[in-house]
Length: 486
Image 1 (cartoon, rainbow, N blue to C red):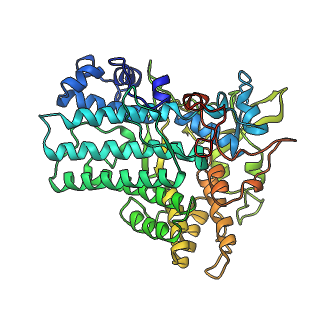
Image 2 (cartoon, helix red, strand yellow):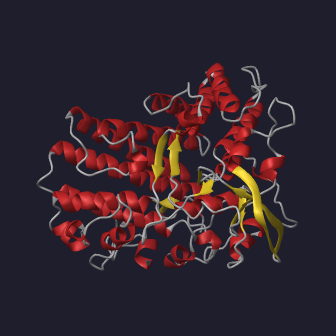
């Protein structure tokens, strides 16, 4: 693991992809048979079609690792929910009171992403020397792999923000540690990966070739290179919008995002839950040895709880009885058992049902990577700041009136940017609640972290997760270092 943290090549034969596939196997999709399960040495020495197919399944499986930690950790920092399991004090102490520690709560969500990136780099190295795939199949495979690599880097930069991150993650074992680059550079690198992947997917689509591997159930609708390109463009639009508020890119990034969204799976006319839910998802199962969705906890569970402010801050529907935003009603229910811990004055009185199926907890429930409801709201932001304010207002109302069952927004094309952002962030908060730490990310990128109440006396809302201690130590820096400004 140390070599992963330090971004150097693994020396132990078979340590990465062999372990990856063994861990990913067990659901119907991720069950890679032993005959096709590649160890690192055999994959690189003899990258056959079957071995590369198995490795591609491993890339998808590895991508979901850590996503549950990502959701509840960022959700805690953004005061969406709280972990009250009681078996690990830093899980509520650090995000609510601070400071975040590089060796504790704050040092997470790093090694798993770079392990995923390393696995993808090994897959790409093996792919380059394969002799039994066509040029089109190789292009399709590169397009998939670099799209998933870009997604991994997005997760990294969203947690570390102004601290930046290394992007040179394929160094020799005896090489120096990879340098950190700015967050704007990370976003630029992500967009470059996605654009290169789009070119490969286009080439494969022009050759009318299929992926030489199966795609997971969560990628239904994106099973071909041409269709996968729409997922790729959705990520590219999101990356461009995040970059727009991360540095000096501004309007050009928003203008680019509008074009990318037009090439994605965006459906601005969606009005139903199914229409908003359309997108790409991570798969889980409760099969022996597979990864289950632990965020899908029953109402009598004692770990993850929704904060009362989710209900208190919600708008009311224009119907008798002051019924709250439909998204709150759909995603939160009272806890069967109230959880209290001595170390924090927040009682667990509400539970999330975001990942329920037919009203019950479901360990096999999928977790969205990106879906249409988010794309409509990304389009609203991009259109507003690119100058098409009427389209932006319509996008907001499309989500607000259909997903939230609320009255149309009072924001008009004559409203100031601050009013639009307030309405945008409200809808992103409730549409994406407990999915990807949206409230924390959005408050930071629009300079509104101070608007999130700490919820505890003496508490604080973190700005970014620190660089893990192992990374600081490898560079000769003290813990909680800032590598761009040592």
